[in-house]
Amino acid sequence: MRHKDFIIVGAGVSGLLTALALGKEGREVLVLERENYLGGMCRSYNVDGYQVDTGPHIMTRIAQGPLKILMDKYFDILPNFVPHGKYYVVLNNRVKPFPWNLRDWVSFDLIPQIDRLYLMKTLFSISYILNTGGDISKKSVGDVVGNNLSDSTIRFLNCMSYFMTGASMKKAPVERFIDAEHYRTKSKNLLDKIYHILMNEGAQDHAYPRGGLKSFITSILSSIPEKRVDIRTGEEVIKIHDNEKTIETTKNEYSYNTLIYSGFASDIPKLVDDKLSPEYVTSLSKLRNINTLTIWLGLNKKIFKRNGSEIWVDCDPHTWVVPVSNYDSSLAPKGKQLVGFAFRLPDKFNENKEKKRALDAIYEIKPEIEKNVDMIHHQILIPEKAVYSVDTVFADIKTPIDGIYLVGTDTERRSMGITRASYSVNRLLSYLREDGLL
Ligand SMILES: Cc1cc2nc3c(=O)[nH]c(=O)nc-3n(C[C@H](O)[C@H](O)[C@H](O)COP(=O)(O)OP(=O)(O)OC[C@H]3O[C@@H](n4cnc5c(N)ncnc54)[C@H](O)[C@@H]3O)c2cc1C
Image: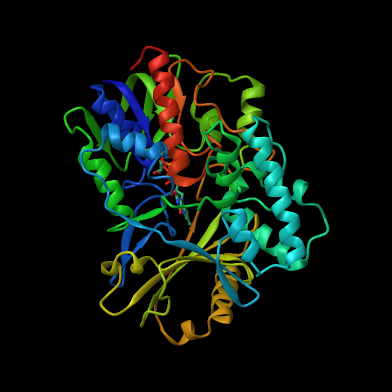
């Protein structure tokens, strides 16, 4: 039986970033991935001459967030980021940039003035609570906005809640909704704090990696020290004998000192031998996730002209529209445009019905699209392993099982997607350091 100091289960972003960090820190690592490809929810492939990603992706907090820490420390080759531009809101047949600060709220006339005044007041008091160290993590957007808003404002808030957290406004934590990182300032000066809330532009460090998600994964892979990190695909971990510190895969058996698991934390009780405490099993069973439908459309001409993405509140179901070939024209054949439309799916759904409903909704909002479709490709995927709602209890990175740690989007509540995965990797590395393993 082969032995490895560290075994990482899963070669998505969380697993690969962990493998990179451990390899660069001089550790011997084996990564096991059940699929025949790397990247998990973060990869690209070709469809009829277009290069699609696993859902439209914009990478966030790249200038000073958790991924930046990992890139600075461990990447030999940095991804080539193209600035995202603005997030445009389409509501009541009109378009405006998303209002990040109070100044923008004043002119955000897609929703009634009375509602804006009320929301500004709410935003101000929440920012005050955040800046004075208060806890709002258990309050939902629905809790703080009350019942007196117009239908279109409620539609806007619900759409933004789904977009930012995967949950409706009744369940979406207000802390996530107003993006604590954006509204919180390190300055102790009260005037600075007020200026920050009033004027600061949000989402300035959001970007798309030129070359698609594939190029981001390639940056990680080409920085990984090959001699120390062995990555195997098409090999599923089917059993973890945690008492002996060995694992069985579909192809081999291995022993380990430390195992880092980046699949769904809720699968852990099925994988390990040990009898876990009922409290631990129950807490893992409470993790919830959602499915998304992405419709990729290849268009015969450039219909989406501006840089940035669009949030179609008017659309039923709501959708986030990202014309990715505006960031990198090589993703589409010459003269054509590639656009991703992401929809949240209901808990129970009929695949064909939802695909038709979503496509019809796109054509209804922009009829010009229907006449210009060159390629249609659908994906049904789970964006994060846990939706961040007010009642989500995330899994702990440190497990009660000797030698086993978790990493990934169900172990961290901050932000979403790749940024959330990166927060989790940074925290895992600190635990490994604390435990004398790094
Ligand atoms: C439609 C959509 C839009 C998105 N938009 C954005 C965005 O705009 N910005 C952003 O930052 N993020 C976005 N994301 C989310 C982001 O891609 C994911 O959150 C992130 O890639 C998750 O990485 P991960 O490594 O934690 O999990 P995963 O990618 O799920 O990786 C886990 C890996 O473990 C493997 N695995 C599991 N169990 C086993 C086993 N027993 N044995 C071997 N292998 C196993 C799986 O096959 C998988 O490859 C989006 C995702 C989707 C679907």
